[in-house]
Length: 289
Image 1: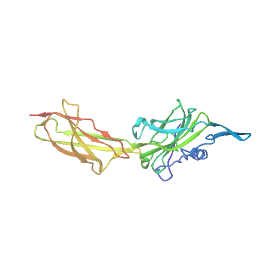
Image 2: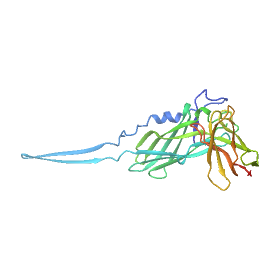
Image 3: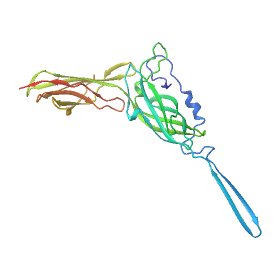
Image 4: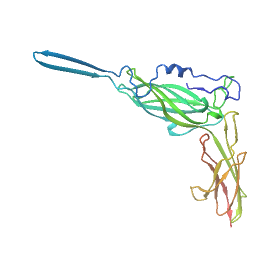
């Protein structure tokens, strides 16, 4: 089960923060990548035999198994993790590596802005890959006075630390083995009017961009964001950008364009470092001669 902690002062509600004691316990046995454990020893035996005036040297050496190596981590199949305000979001983290004896177990920590922290562990299903699943949310735990959730300040780039054990008992700690975006969900609306419209007349296209507020559990207007206005002709499957408009202080969008042909109008927001992308469903406008 994944566990989350955020630093005191970031919450806007009551409740206790969950501390990550497991991280401190692990620190005792973690070793940086590239440093050998006690098994990384070359044992040599040298025998020297003296006979008459001649000397012969016989040497034999035994090399211990190599250290485990962590090569990388794949989070959510390479996609950002987008979180709204009502539902839990589950995503996988796969840590890959190698060892002569095969990988057996992994502790995985996710660390984000302003003290965001999740941790869980997993048995490795193959000799080279350990996969675990995290559950994150931005809503209070039902029926609890101890909400476990994200705050707006936690949105952004998160890093992955992994402590991996091999079947022969060796282990290696790999800090920053991967990273991903944990972002607030966004939504877009659109309305193009009048419908129908005479060819050559002006069409007014409006809409609104909102994003999840993890502190209030509501969606609110996203101000000052560049959003593309796009058009798709009636018999085409491709949208083309016609203009770029910035949202108002309340997230509203508004512009006018000339009516040329039948087709669909939509707004397209590509997202930011803290907020996921959003596309409005196309609004069809019938253009008449």
